Length: 112
Image (cartoon, rainbow, N blue to C red):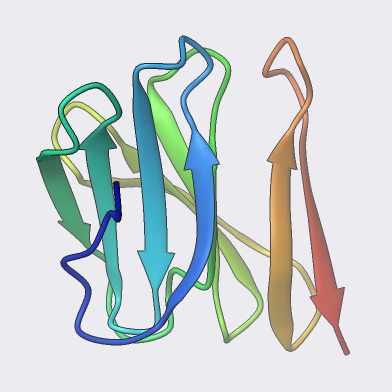
C-alpha cells in the first residue's frame, strides 16, 4: 500500500528494527510513523520545515534520528515526540543518518 499523509515530498523512509513500523520524513517537517500491517498512521512528530530531511530508527526503537537542512542531527522520542538531543555536524545539509547495529553510534553524512 501507499503510505501518504504528507503535504510535501517524502525525502526518506526507515523501517523499525522489529519490522512492525515504518517512519517517513518529508519536506513538510513531519515524521509520520505507520503500522506496516494495517497501513494506518500510528503517530506524527512535527519537527519544523526541512528539519527532518532524512530519518532513521534507533535499534532500541526509543528514538528516531533526523538530519536537517541546517546540518543538525536531531533525536526525537518515539514515546512523546519531543526532541531529546541535537548535534551540529559542521556541515550545511545532513543528507543521511544511521545507527550502528547496537545503537551505540550514530553517523551522519553532510554536504559542505
